[in-house]
Amino acid sequence: MAEFIHLHLHTEYSLLDGAARIEEVTAEAARLGLPALAITDHGSMYGVVDFYKACRKAGIKPILGCEFYVAPRGMGDRTPRVDDSPFHLVLLAENQEGYQNLLRLASLSFTEGFYYKPRVDRVALQNHHRGLIALSGCLGGEVAVNLLAGNMDRAREAAAFYRDLFGPEHYYLELQDHGMPEQQKLNPLLASLGEEMGIPLVATNDVHYVKREHAEIQDVLLCIQTGKTMNDTGRMKFKSDQLYLRSPRDMDQVLGRWPGALANTVRIAERCQVEISFDQMHLPDFAVPPGHTPQSYLRELCEEGVRRRYGPDPSPEVRERLEYELSVIEKMGFSAYFLIVWDFINFARGQGIPVGPGRGSAAGSLVAYSLGITSLDPLAYGLLFERFLNPGRISMPDIDTDICFERRPEVINYVVNRYGADRVAQIITFGTMAARAAIRDVGRVLSMPYADVDKVAKLVPAELHMTIAKALEASPELREAYEEKPEVKKLIDTAAGLEGMPRHASTHAAGIVITKKPLTEYLPLYRSTDGTVTTQFAMTTVEELGLLKMDLWGLRTLTVIGETVRLIRESGGPAIDPDRLPLDDRATYEMLSRGETTAVFQFES
Image (cartoon, rainbow, N blue to C red; front, top):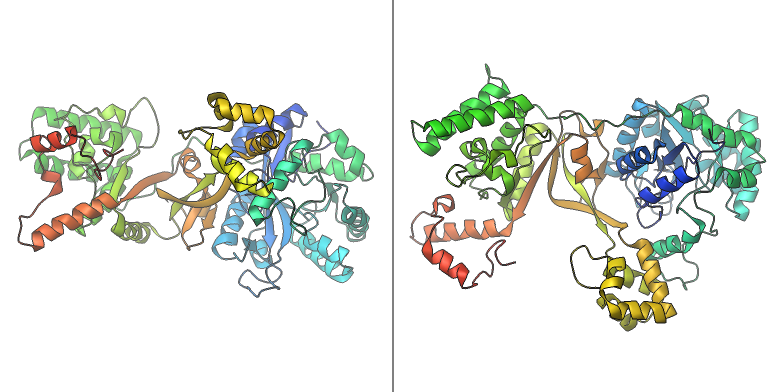
């Protein structure tokens, strides 16, 4: 067992601040022989599941945590120059209860405590402290700030509060040494306070990048975050290049004066035991009429639907296909899933909200067709059910639904009211720094002339999934500039160090998650700038956790079609049902053959 474990680490999900890519930092930890590693991103848990998987892949134990912002007063207080400078506090999940409390605190910090930063307060910590190990934080911690300001009474009060709240061996005073004068002054004060108050010490490195040579890349990230250049005076920056994943030997050299603080990292790591499950599905309940089960109700709806679609006496082919699909759905436990989708689509159609005919593999399902989820006859076109739901591949069905863009919020509100605001949320997505954008961002930070940077950026081929490495191979002109011009080489190398990192969070265009229990039992929540509550986990993570994810795409094409149908009817024309238009209209095919596809959805591109 190593004599030191990193318990304070910021990945790329400390947006525009952390430069430690999860895959790289976990691989480096394994190379250093560390048996465990913690993630403590600033104020969020965006990356904990990716980090958990990467650690398992690297053969090391993941320790899940977060460096929270603690409001100076209460989460609801928002007075300028009073409440806009929160303290830092690192919380690590010791067990499953602790992980649940991390989820709840991370959610509260965004949904109730946001003021410049996502914040918790002492009341929130009192309500959700069980199963957590607390570290006092960096120079921005409450105890550290007061010690450096000479406010000994306040420092003691804060230390006593956290010590008494979290309990013995669950609150530690954090020692760091990145060569900063403030830390040289602070560490002896912390050690003295710990001895006086019976609070143990713990050694950490405030890791923001993997290797020492990555310090400049992290500095560029800070400039992008703050809109500054490297030449700006007084800008936000770290006064050290030592915020990297140091080896245990390096940590002993800088903090060996307090051997107990180093040893405590190992003790804490041994105590942290959290598992994330990926092998369970968590379908929400669907309220069926009295006397029914989800299976029997789905059968009844499908029987009604095939008679509506095929007449009162459906053919043996239809009946056999329906029975086969229902048996597979029942065996896989997805009856409630189909009822949930049927319910909100049925609502939309009942409200006159235009709904698409179905996209993707769901069009191969007779059950979906009979329920009105899709509008294409899978038997008439030889479509395969197994492409949509295969009994040999246990995974959640995935039905993408197109909804009129302008009235999509009505459908979302219906789902929220049906299942509860605490069990429905939209899903987060992260904008990442693509090759050209990274080059332009870095060029601005390095104060390079815009025209020169723009010329370099335009040498990157405008192709899907293009990277800087691929561009250097594909563009001889870019390769030549890279090899012959030092300033271009620096620009490209720095941009490559940032490429692909998340730049900002936003709301996914379609994704919605519906959960059986309150959302915070499964994941942390985020509130966007427009007030929309979303998950902190991206869509792939939501699905990996076995949660029900729906894609409700808002399409302007459906809005246009709906308006067109309305205007024709109001002007005395015939009543048109878009779902009943012939799919073999010769004039339509001749028009498409002539290339007249402008504004025809998915055809014009």
